[in-house]
Length: 290
Image 1 (tube, rainbow, N blue to C red):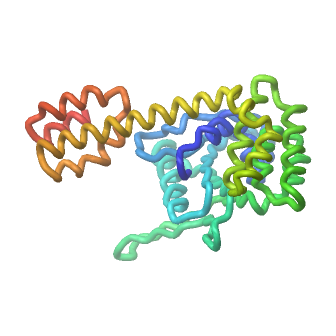
Image 2: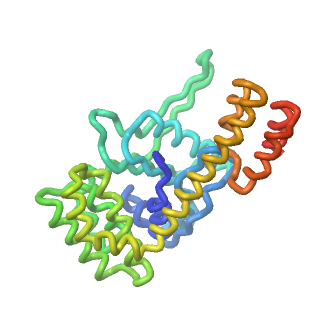
Image 3: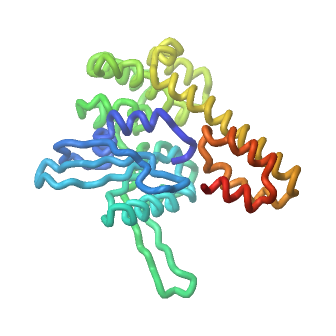
């Protein structure tokens, strides 16, 4: 929910049922990760999962949001998620927000109340908020679900972290499917940075999970590097276009910044040429929206 996190996306796609169990959803007969692009939006849910219940066999739609820390943006995104699904499917989804690490006294919100300006309309919403630091690590380790292991270092436990991280490594080595072994080691390493600021300690813990070599061998790391490279190139090209428009039409062109951020990378080369030749900002805006 905070910065784009490819490792969380991978966990949702491959172990989404494990994440639902973190929120107490255990009656899962089968599950399917869906594309999050329910409708056109600048901010999409982190994950959408379709679940068939073990009891009645009914299908339910779950929205998963991952928040590194509690902050004021979380309720806004949870509300948008519910609204998106309701508009697209005409159903109210089950929304789960997984908070990974506490942040001072900031509340991990599980509800929001929206009111119209005149007070004629009130929208009272709530969702399941899972505070990972309050979940006992022993429960996750005893569940027999390797998809829960990457969350264990952020859960509640006593004693030195080396002990719990070694147990995570043992579970992954023993239970992970061969094609997921390196990825599970890598995504577990990613989460250590949220809890441990001491670089020496963090490095020591990561070594217990395979260290740099495990990261190199993880296909998910290669996807993350490619994603960040593409993101950097996209932002640079968007900035170039905006600079051309400002040079031609003045500061009024800066109002197009948000629209440019929504443009996919493969269209940006075309828009550079349009920015250099268009007769007005209105004509450029028309090309962006077409």
